Length: 313
Image 1 (cartoon, rainbow, N blue to C red):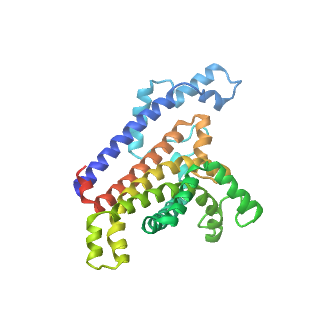
Image 2: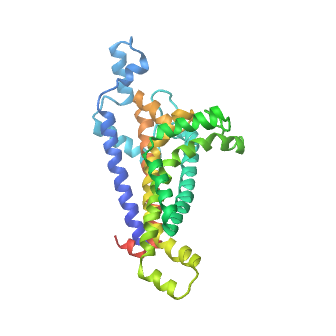
Image 3: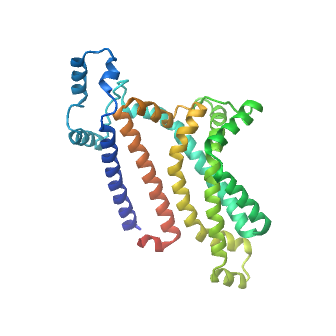
Protein backbone atom coordinates (compact mmCIF):
# COMPACT_ATOMS: atom_id res chain seq x y z
CA UNK A 1 0.00 0.00 0.00
CA UNK A 2 2.90 2.38 0.75
CA UNK A 3 4.30 2.10 -2.78
CA UNK A 4 0.81 2.60 -4.17
CA UNK A 5 0.40 5.86 -2.22
CA UNK A 6 3.90 7.08 -3.17
CA UNK A 7 3.16 6.59 -6.87
CA UNK A 8 -0.09 8.50 -6.60
CA UNK A 9 1.55 11.36 -4.68
CA UNK A 10 4.37 11.61 -7.24
CA UNK A 11 1.89 11.68 -10.10
CA UNK A 12 -0.12 14.38 -8.32
CA UNK A 13 2.96 16.53 -7.74
CA UNK A 14 3.93 16.27 -11.41
CA UNK A 15 0.39 17.19 -12.45
CA UNK A 16 0.38 20.24 -10.17
CA UNK A 17 3.68 21.41 -11.64
CA UNK A 18 2.45 21.08 -15.23
CA UNK A 19 -0.83 22.85 -14.50
CA UNK A 20 0.95 25.70 -12.71
CA UNK A 21 3.25 26.20 -15.69
CA UNK A 22 0.41 26.15 -18.22
CA UNK A 23 -1.74 28.45 -16.10
CA UNK A 24 0.99 31.02 -15.63
CA UNK A 25 1.85 30.92 -19.33
CA UNK A 26 -1.76 31.56 -20.33
CA UNK A 27 -2.18 34.33 -17.77
CA UNK A 28 1.03 36.01 -18.97
CA UNK A 29 -0.29 36.43 -22.51
CA UNK A 30 -0.86 40.20 -22.81
CA UNK A 31 -4.60 40.83 -22.69
CA UNK A 32 -5.05 43.14 -19.69
CA UNK A 33 -2.86 46.16 -18.93
CA UNK A 34 -2.73 45.67 -15.17
CA UNK A 35 -0.60 48.74 -14.49
CA UNK A 36 -2.97 51.02 -16.40
CA UNK A 37 -5.96 49.56 -14.56
CA UNK A 38 -4.23 50.31 -11.28
CA UNK A 39 -3.16 53.84 -12.19
CA UNK A 40 -6.17 54.83 -14.28
CA UNK A 41 -6.67 55.35 -17.99
CA UNK A 42 -5.30 58.90 -17.83
CA UNK A 43 -1.95 57.94 -16.31
CA UNK A 44 1.19 58.84 -18.24
CA UNK A 45 2.92 56.02 -20.08
CA UNK A 46 6.09 56.57 -18.05
CA UNK A 47 4.18 55.86 -14.84
CA UNK A 48 2.58 52.80 -16.39
CA UNK A 49 5.97 51.44 -17.47
CA UNK A 50 7.38 52.09 -14.00
CA UNK A 51 4.45 50.24 -12.39
CA UNK A 52 4.91 47.27 -14.72
CA UNK A 53 8.57 47.19 -13.74
CA UNK A 54 7.67 47.33 -10.04
CA UNK A 55 5.32 44.37 -10.51
CA UNK A 56 7.96 42.50 -12.50
CA UNK A 57 5.81 42.39 -15.62
CA UNK A 58 8.62 43.74 -17.81
CA UNK A 59 10.60 40.52 -17.39
CA UNK A 60 10.27 37.35 -19.56
CA UNK A 61 7.34 35.14 -18.64
CA UNK A 62 9.61 32.19 -17.80
CA UNK A 63 11.58 34.26 -15.30
CA UNK A 64 8.35 35.49 -13.71
CA UNK A 65 7.07 31.91 -13.42
CA UNK A 66 10.29 30.56 -11.87
CA UNK A 67 10.27 33.37 -9.29
CA UNK A 68 6.63 32.67 -8.50
CA UNK A 69 7.28 28.91 -8.24
CA UNK A 70 10.24 29.37 -5.90
CA UNK A 71 8.13 31.53 -3.59
CA UNK A 72 5.05 29.28 -3.83
CA UNK A 73 7.06 26.22 -2.79
CA UNK A 74 7.93 28.13 0.40
CA UNK A 75 4.23 28.91 0.93
CA UNK A 76 4.52 32.54 -0.19
CA UNK A 77 1.94 33.42 -2.85
CA UNK A 78 2.59 37.15 -2.60
CA UNK A 79 0.05 39.96 -2.35
CA UNK A 80 -2.83 41.05 -4.53
CA UNK A 81 -1.88 43.61 -7.16
CA UNK A 82 -5.15 45.47 -6.67
CA UNK A 83 -5.83 45.29 -2.93
CA UNK A 84 -2.29 44.70 -1.56
CA UNK A 85 -3.82 42.03 0.68
CA UNK A 86 -1.89 38.87 1.46
CA UNK A 87 -3.08 36.27 -1.03
CA UNK A 88 -3.39 33.34 1.38
CA UNK A 89 -5.17 35.51 3.95
CA UNK A 90 -7.65 36.74 1.34
CA UNK A 91 -8.39 33.19 0.22
CA UNK A 92 -8.58 31.87 3.79
CA UNK A 93 -11.40 34.33 4.53
CA UNK A 94 -13.47 32.88 1.69
CA UNK A 95 -12.41 29.24 1.63
CA UNK A 96 -14.69 28.06 4.51
CA UNK A 97 -17.75 29.07 2.46
CA UNK A 98 -16.80 26.93 -0.51
CA UNK A 99 -15.62 24.06 1.70
CA UNK A 100 -19.00 24.10 3.46
CA UNK A 101 -20.74 23.70 0.12
CA UNK A 102 -18.45 20.97 -1.19
CA UNK A 103 -18.48 18.96 2.05
CA UNK A 104 -22.26 19.18 2.19
CA UNK A 105 -22.70 18.19 -1.45
CA UNK A 106 -20.30 15.27 -1.09
CA UNK A 107 -22.14 13.98 1.98
CA UNK A 108 -25.59 14.37 0.41
CA UNK A 109 -24.44 12.80 -2.85
CA UNK A 110 -22.80 9.83 -1.15
CA UNK A 111 -25.81 9.05 1.06
CA UNK A 112 -28.59 9.58 -1.48
CA UNK A 113 -26.72 7.89 -4.32
CA UNK A 114 -25.97 4.87 -2.18
CA UNK A 115 -29.59 4.53 -1.04
CA UNK A 116 -31.13 5.10 -4.48
CA UNK A 117 -28.60 2.97 -6.38
CA UNK A 118 -28.81 0.10 -3.90
CA UNK A 119 -32.60 0.27 -3.83
CA UNK A 120 -32.84 0.18 -7.62
CA UNK A 121 -30.17 -2.50 -8.10
CA UNK A 122 -31.68 -4.89 -5.56
CA UNK A 123 -35.42 -4.35 -6.10
CA UNK A 124 -35.36 -3.82 -9.90
CA UNK A 125 -38.75 -3.65 -11.68
CA UNK A 126 -40.77 -0.47 -11.14
CA UNK A 127 -38.42 0.75 -8.44
CA UNK A 128 -35.50 0.54 -10.86
CA UNK A 129 -37.38 2.40 -13.59
CA UNK A 130 -38.48 5.08 -11.13
CA UNK A 131 -34.92 5.66 -9.89
CA UNK A 132 -33.58 5.73 -13.46
CA UNK A 133 -36.15 8.35 -14.46
CA UNK A 134 -35.19 10.47 -11.46
CA UNK A 135 -31.50 10.08 -12.25
CA UNK A 136 -31.80 10.91 -15.95
CA UNK A 137 -34.04 13.90 -15.21
CA UNK A 138 -31.69 15.25 -12.57
CA UNK A 139 -28.67 14.78 -14.80
CA UNK A 140 -30.31 16.39 -17.84
CA UNK A 141 -31.64 19.52 -16.13
CA UNK A 142 -29.29 22.52 -16.43
CA UNK A 143 -27.72 23.44 -13.11
CA UNK A 144 -28.66 27.12 -13.33
CA UNK A 145 -32.31 26.22 -13.99
CA UNK A 146 -32.45 23.92 -10.97
CA UNK A 147 -30.88 26.62 -8.83
CA UNK A 148 -33.28 29.34 -9.98
CA UNK A 149 -36.33 27.11 -9.47
CA UNK A 150 -35.19 26.25 -5.94
CA UNK A 151 -34.65 29.92 -5.10
CA UNK A 152 -38.09 30.85 -6.43
CA UNK A 153 -39.90 27.99 -4.68
CA UNK A 154 -38.17 27.59 -1.31
CA UNK A 155 -36.87 31.12 -0.76
CA UNK A 156 -39.31 33.47 -2.51
CA UNK A 157 -42.62 31.60 -2.40
CA UNK A 158 -42.33 29.48 0.75
CA UNK A 159 -39.76 31.61 2.60
CA UNK A 160 -38.10 28.59 4.16
CA UNK A 161 -34.57 29.75 3.39
CA UNK A 162 -32.91 33.10 2.64
CA UNK A 163 -32.47 33.81 -1.06
CA UNK A 164 -29.01 35.35 -0.72
CA UNK A 165 -26.33 35.89 1.90
CA UNK A 166 -24.14 33.80 4.15
CA UNK A 167 -23.85 33.39 7.92
CA UNK A 168 -20.63 31.87 9.23
CA UNK A 169 -20.69 28.69 11.27
CA UNK A 170 -18.89 30.46 14.10
CA UNK A 171 -21.70 33.04 14.28
CA UNK A 172 -24.74 30.77 14.31
CA UNK A 173 -25.13 27.09 13.42
CA UNK A 174 -28.79 27.44 12.48
CA UNK A 175 -28.05 30.57 10.47
CA UNK A 176 -25.20 28.83 8.67
CA UNK A 177 -27.38 25.82 7.95
CA UNK A 178 -30.18 27.98 6.53
CA UNK A 179 -27.81 29.79 4.16
CA UNK A 180 -26.02 26.69 2.79
CA UNK A 181 -28.96 24.26 2.49
CA UNK A 182 -30.36 25.56 -0.80
CA UNK A 183 -26.93 25.89 -2.50
CA UNK A 184 -26.02 22.36 -1.37
CA UNK A 185 -29.28 20.92 -2.69
CA UNK A 186 -28.89 22.78 -5.99
CA UNK A 187 -25.39 21.39 -6.49
CA UNK A 188 -26.39 17.89 -5.37
CA UNK A 189 -29.08 17.25 -8.00
CA UNK A 190 -26.74 16.48 -10.89
CA UNK A 191 -24.18 14.73 -8.67
CA UNK A 192 -26.72 12.37 -7.13
CA UNK A 193 -28.06 11.52 -10.57
CA UNK A 194 -24.67 10.49 -11.94
CA UNK A 195 -23.42 8.55 -8.92
CA UNK A 196 -26.76 6.77 -8.29
CA UNK A 197 -26.69 5.37 -11.82
CA UNK A 198 -23.18 4.07 -11.26
CA UNK A 199 -24.11 2.47 -7.93
CA UNK A 200 -27.14 0.83 -9.53
CA UNK A 201 -25.12 -0.63 -12.40
CA UNK A 202 -22.36 -1.87 -10.09
CA UNK A 203 -24.83 -3.53 -7.71
CA UNK A 204 -26.56 -5.32 -10.60
CA UNK A 205 -23.21 -6.57 -11.94
CA UNK A 206 -22.09 -7.85 -8.53
CA UNK A 207 -25.41 -9.59 -7.88
CA UNK A 208 -24.84 -11.62 -11.06
CA UNK A 209 -21.48 -12.97 -9.87
CA UNK A 210 -21.13 -16.65 -9.02
CA UNK A 211 -19.89 -16.05 -5.49
CA UNK A 212 -23.14 -14.21 -4.65
CA UNK A 213 -25.14 -17.23 -5.79
CA UNK A 214 -22.88 -19.39 -3.64
CA UNK A 215 -23.48 -17.21 -0.59
CA UNK A 216 -27.23 -17.41 -1.17
CA UNK A 217 -27.04 -21.19 -1.55
CA UNK A 218 -25.24 -21.39 1.81
CA UNK A 219 -28.24 -19.73 3.42
CA UNK A 220 -26.69 -16.40 4.39
CA UNK A 221 -29.28 -13.70 5.16
CA UNK A 222 -29.90 -11.41 2.14
CA UNK A 223 -29.17 -8.29 4.20
CA UNK A 224 -25.77 -9.65 5.23
CA UNK A 225 -24.92 -10.52 1.62
CA UNK A 226 -25.88 -7.04 0.44
CA UNK A 227 -24.13 -5.08 3.16
CA UNK A 228 -20.97 -7.12 3.65
CA UNK A 229 -20.25 -8.45 0.16
CA UNK A 230 -22.23 -6.78 -2.61
CA UNK A 231 -21.90 -3.23 -1.33
CA UNK A 232 -18.14 -3.49 -0.78
CA UNK A 233 -17.47 -4.75 -4.31
CA UNK A 234 -19.89 -2.29 -5.90
CA UNK A 235 -18.46 0.71 -4.03
CA UNK A 236 -15.19 1.04 -5.99
CA UNK A 237 -16.71 2.23 -9.33
CA UNK A 238 -19.07 4.55 -7.45
CA UNK A 239 -16.15 6.10 -5.58
CA UNK A 240 -14.41 6.84 -8.88
CA UNK A 241 -17.47 8.67 -10.18
CA UNK A 242 -17.86 10.52 -6.88
CA UNK A 243 -14.27 11.73 -7.20
CA UNK A 244 -14.95 13.02 -10.71
CA UNK A 245 -18.10 14.73 -9.50
CA UNK A 246 -15.96 16.63 -6.98
CA UNK A 247 -14.00 18.15 -9.87
CA UNK A 248 -17.25 19.27 -11.48
CA UNK A 249 -18.37 20.86 -8.21
CA UNK A 250 -15.59 23.44 -8.51
CA UNK A 251 -17.20 24.80 -11.66
CA UNK A 252 -20.72 24.53 -10.28
CA UNK A 253 -19.71 26.42 -7.14
CA UNK A 254 -18.89 29.49 -9.25
CA UNK A 255 -22.45 29.67 -10.58
CA UNK A 256 -24.16 28.84 -7.29
CA UNK A 257 -22.11 31.33 -5.28
CA UNK A 258 -22.93 34.06 -7.77
CA UNK A 259 -26.68 33.33 -7.63
CA UNK A 260 -26.86 33.06 -3.83
CA UNK A 261 -24.41 35.88 -3.18
CA UNK A 262 -22.04 33.67 -1.23
CA UNK A 263 -18.54 35.07 -0.52
CA UNK A 264 -16.67 31.91 -1.54
CA UNK A 265 -13.68 31.30 -3.77
CA UNK A 266 -15.97 30.67 -6.74
CA UNK A 267 -17.24 34.24 -6.84
CA UNK A 268 -13.76 35.41 -5.88
CA UNK A 269 -12.30 33.68 -8.94
CA UNK A 270 -14.68 35.51 -11.27
CA UNK A 271 -13.90 38.92 -9.79
CA UNK A 272 -10.12 38.65 -9.77
CA UNK A 273 -9.89 36.91 -13.16
CA UNK A 274 -11.62 39.79 -14.92
CA UNK A 275 -9.01 42.16 -13.45
CA UNK A 276 -6.02 39.96 -14.25
CA UNK A 277 -4.73 39.71 -10.68
CA UNK A 278 -2.21 36.92 -11.33
CA UNK A 279 -1.08 36.31 -7.69
CA UNK A 280 -4.67 35.69 -6.58
CA UNK A 281 -5.59 33.66 -9.67
CA UNK A 282 -2.54 31.41 -9.45
CA UNK A 283 -3.18 30.73 -5.76
CA UNK A 284 -6.80 29.84 -6.51
CA UNK A 285 -5.74 27.56 -9.35
CA UNK A 286 -3.20 25.74 -7.21
CA UNK A 287 -5.58 25.36 -4.26
CA UNK A 288 -8.17 23.87 -6.61
CA UNK A 289 -5.61 21.54 -8.18
CA UNK A 290 -4.29 20.39 -4.81
CA UNK A 291 -7.85 19.83 -3.61
CA UNK A 292 -8.63 17.66 -6.63
CA UNK A 293 -5.37 15.72 -6.22
CA UNK A 294 -6.01 15.07 -2.52
CA UNK A 295 -9.58 13.90 -3.16
CA UNK A 296 -8.47 11.61 -5.98
CA UNK A 297 -5.69 10.24 -3.76
CA UNK A 298 -8.19 9.47 -1.01
CA UNK A 299 -10.49 7.82 -3.55
CA UNK A 300 -7.58 5.74 -4.91
CA UNK A 301 -6.62 4.66 -1.38
CA UNK A 302 -10.20 3.63 -0.61
CA UNK A 303 -10.47 1.75 -3.90
CA UNK A 304 -7.12 0.07 -3.21
CA UNK A 305 -8.40 -0.97 0.20
CA UNK A 306 -11.64 -2.32 -1.26
CA UNK A 307 -9.95 -3.95 -4.25
CA UNK A 308 -6.28 -4.90 -3.69
CA UNK A 309 -5.85 -5.55 -7.43
CA UNK A 310 -6.22 -1.80 -8.07
CA UNK A 311 -2.94 -1.15 -6.21
CA UNK A 312 -1.02 -2.80 -9.04
CA UNK A 313 -2.02 -0.17 -11.60
